[in-house]
Length: 128
Image 1: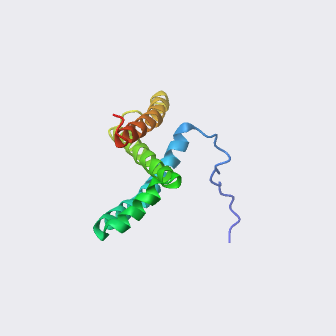
Image 2: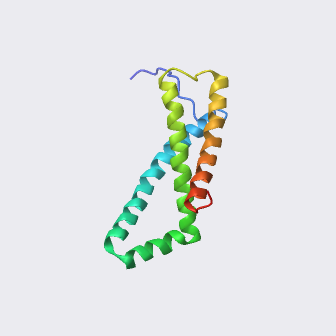
Image 3: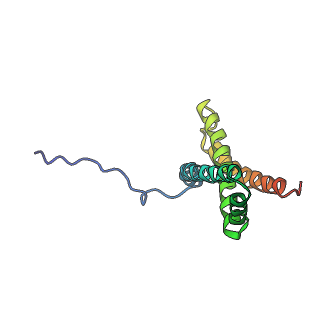
C-alpha cells in the first residue's frame, strides 16, 4: 500500500458564509419542507372527503397558533423555492453568473419570497 499524500476536500469551516451559500441550502431545505406540506394537503383532502367531523378536526389543528405557523412556513417555503427556481432557470440560460448579478438576484429572491408570502396571506384572509 502506497503512502501517497492526497489533497483533502475543504470543509465548511474553510469557507466564509455568504447569502448565496445560505440560499443554496435553503433551496434544498424548502424542497424537503414542500414534501412535508404535501402531507398537509393530503390530510386536508382526506378530511374533506371523510366528512364534517374530520374537516372540523383539520380546521381546529390548522387554526391554532402552531397550525398557522406551520402554514406560514409552508407558504414561505413554497415562495422561496419558486423564486429560487426561477433564478435557476435564468442560470440555465447562462445569465446572471457575474458575482454582482448573483448578489443582486439572491437579495431579490429573499425579498420577493417575503412579499409573495405576505400577499398570499393577505389574499387568504380577505384583506386584498
